[in-house]
Length: 134
Image 1 (cartoon, helix red, strand yellow):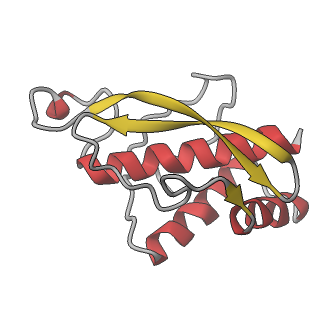
Image 2: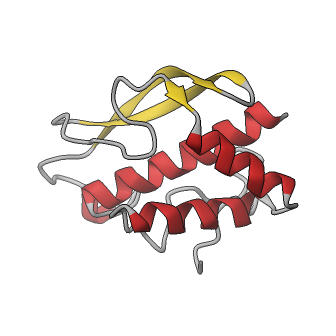
């Protein structure tokens, strides 16, 4: 169960980073025919202190300039991120509240994110994961 929570929060944060990097959210018409765009995802297995191995999907961009902050390229071990997710979960925060807390943390390191996330409630059965008014 905790593996799924960690995976969901990390993947959502990575999508937020990608939107920040490209300057538009997924599926927005403004992103069409721009120089750089999303180019699928790649699978990556990271090691966490709390849940062991966690499989995540990391978004890619066409020109390869996307440098994620939360899970850096070639990084395999996550100790700080899963500790934050676990502490938020242990405090009884919902997944949406945990995502907002993680977003605030990303802003501190320079990733602003967008108010209109590419994830719409119900897409993967985790309604309420991202609140567009947060």
